[in-house]
Image (cartoon, rainbow over all chains, first blue to last red; front, top):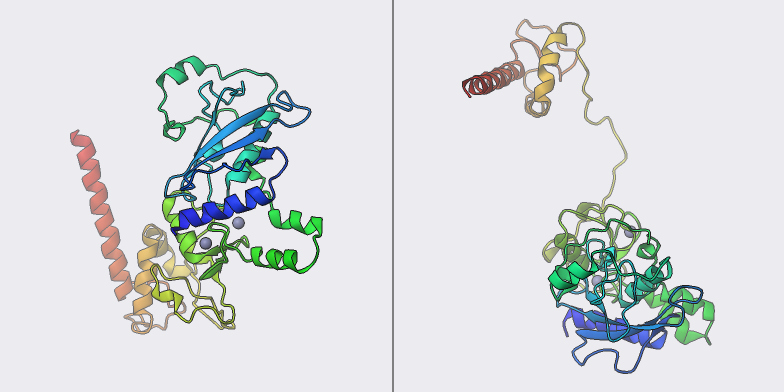
Length: 151
Length: 198
Ligand SMILES: [Zn+2]
Ligand SMILES: [Zn+2]
């Protein structure tokens, strides 16, 4: 088994045996080859998204964990958030330039929950319309500009 | 941003739960020596100066991925391939890890300090002018003085030199400095000429 699959196997095992609060692991969380996952996250209590459930899709290249996974929201419920486009793409630095191989599916999910928690209003980014029309299907192809890291 | 730096630690949470004895403890012990990249028990283990443990091959692969940003994957402190410490436990594989490519850096043994290399002394007396010229070619000066160290200690007039590193007029070192500064001056003039003809 290659190192990428070994690591994904370990992550899957850990996440499904002790999932942290806010992360739901269904039984069919990962595809057979482990290269695509779907993880459900729940909005934290006391935030704008309290109790709402969102689905995150992870795609892993063979270079994982040295290159970041491709992560986006999928399904009917895409959170309206200043860093989430209506097509599910997420503008989050750890998914691009700030990725390190010490991060994991679990830490990415927790970061996204925390990102949702700090929103002050439910609104997509201002450039949503134009971005969604022009962007690549793969969010990792976008050169993100992290102008506001506090939201 | 907060979430970027949060690293959920499963080991600490399993500690808090207590569990019932050996199973949990054993798992906890093992994960303490897991590589922060592949999550396996570290092989050819190295530890960074910030204290984070990696397999040597894993760390090298990460540093090769981002040649411009050499950061520790865990704490993002600056990290250097040459400044990690290899960890030699008992047992393990008998192969020499240095045979692998790229070789793991060796542990550093520092000897008790002795006199060592004499430091540079800035011009005293007659060396003054020479040195103000020499500053521009500092590395060359040092280099050449390394080679002439044992040989030409005495000036042409037979005076013993007080400082072996300061260039006395007429010595080989002096000639080299002269030559270099002449060369630089020539380059400077050429550049000036080129600017004027534009
Ligand atoms: Zn490793
Ligand atoms: Zn570190």
